[in-house]
Length: 174
Image (cartoon, rainbow, N blue to C red):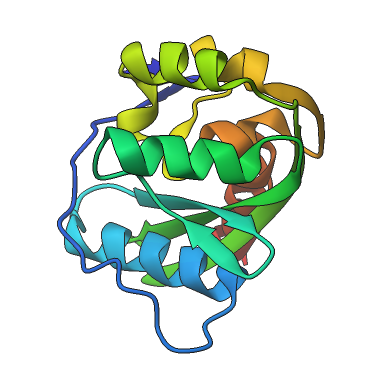
């Protein structure tokens, strides 16, 4: 797959996504992004890992397991502001470097009617998304505004990726 001028191969990793006791959202997404990158580490190319979590107050809102859970999550988010954290990890086999960073974005949700929530759940879109919504798809109607990077909410913070690549290039030249 070609994105941002780079060739990518998507390899779904199998990692335990259990949150550690008292783990901060930023630490959680960085730890998981790095674990995912390590799981699919390739000796011949750079590996990128990413993980996203939706946090409302102190509650982590993961992917819903079923329709009732999706409804419960969307009811909680209705009319509220939450934070989306995305961790990004890079592993470079050429220099042995491994690093993880994160970005966060505030998301302001519209007040949602039960009918709108159920119609959205019927689309199937919420079922594989942290927080039970996809801002880049049909779920865009749920969001009033964001404060931060849209790509962070989508799950691949391109600005952060470019910064991390530039830091890596400087390290390689040193």
